[in-house]
Image (cartoon, rainbow, N blue to C red; front, side):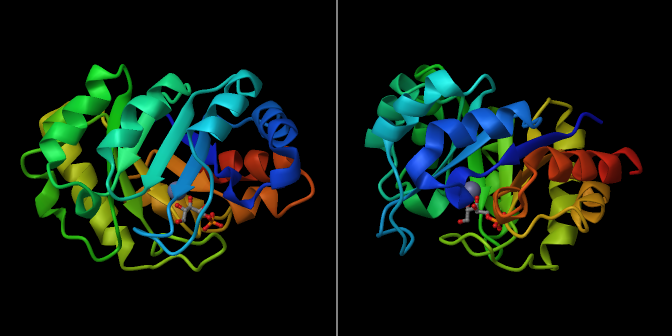
Amino acid sequence: MAFRIAPSILSADFARLGEEVRAVTKAGADLIHFDVMDNHYVPSLTVGPLVCAALRPHAEVPLDVHLMVKPVDRLVSEFARAGASIISFHPEASEHIDRTIALIRENGCKPGLVLNPATPLACLDYTLEKLDLVLLMSVNPGFGGQQFIQSVLPKITEVRRRIDALGRDIWLEVDGGVKADNIASIARAGADTFVAGSAIFGAKDYAAVIREMRARLAMV
Ligand code: DX5
Ligand code: ZN
């Protein structure tokens, strides 16, 4: 299986974001994970399409935009114009999930659905075949640096089973508390794409952390 590492710039130095994106790309990132928080769906407030557009020229890899905002739809075209490749949203934040998925695709981006640790898999029943990515949260959204919630592991396995049964190339991404020492168990559960914020940006040598993560993944 191809594994992808998506550093979350939430834990980067916001005074030097362009530089941080270049550094982490050079260090081996496959995607740049861009966390958008609105002080409404989640208690934190981060950045919007303006910052996404400013970073686009600095990222040689796709931008993986994780919307923690409510409502979702109005921001979709703005993030598409700002250079997003993937746009993921939380089903609780959209009144019409199917419409939001279609909107993301109409805007030329790959749609992803994000499930919080306690969100049941039922919301994938009529949507999975329309998605390019399922993002399973392994912490409650809103903050970096939280502990990985172990009960998400069997959930990853169940989503992997559903994706394989469908036979479409849908990425299975995990976000929250991912580190070099648990990445192999998360991969073994069935994930192929790994968001890591504090584990990468909290270290001095980004390349060393990404290399260590890849070494652990190579043993899966
Ligand atoms: C949390 C964000 C995550 C966060 C992960 O709401 O969606 O992407 O940056 O941070 P770590 O890797 O530190 O748990
Ligand atoms: Zn995220």
